[in-house]
Image 1 (tube, rainbow, N blue to C red):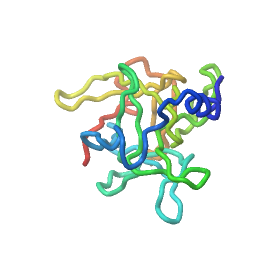
Image 2 (spheres, rainbow, N blue to C red):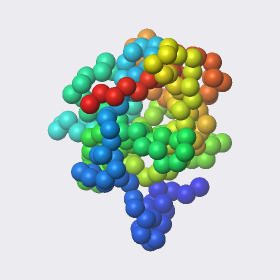
Image 3 (tube, rainbow, N blue to C red):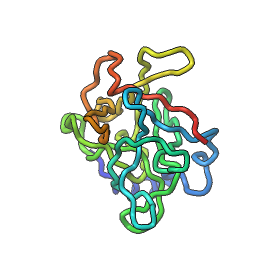
Length: 193
């Protein structure tokens, strides 16, 4: 298992580009911000924890809230690091654990091998690092023409994003439902400029 520090050091040593840069680069050239809307609750995937200045903080838990067009903690940039795989980066910068502003991505709560991943762990926002824990495969589910629905299956854990509960407040990884159109694992991603 490689740690994030190892990945950062390896990228720096060979001169590879790191996470997408704030204020420029491909992420900010996106055709439109997207909201990730759960089809059962009609609520948006949201970074829940902010500091006193209203900035999302690195490590923030991800949950669901009613979509607000001015809430940047609900706006995502979808990039495709490889064929068939998507990475979701928050539109707004995230206040990193070191105090710097960084790009924040939808991520698993722990960097451990697949065999150590557990259903029910709540998703978080972490510094974008192109690791497999930040890569998602979109699988279509039965949907209405013109409104594609999909489930997001994580490349590392092989589990899908799921939501549950009366208030629909947590977004966590859960065992894939096997392609059944289970609405707790079904999302749409409309453009929300």
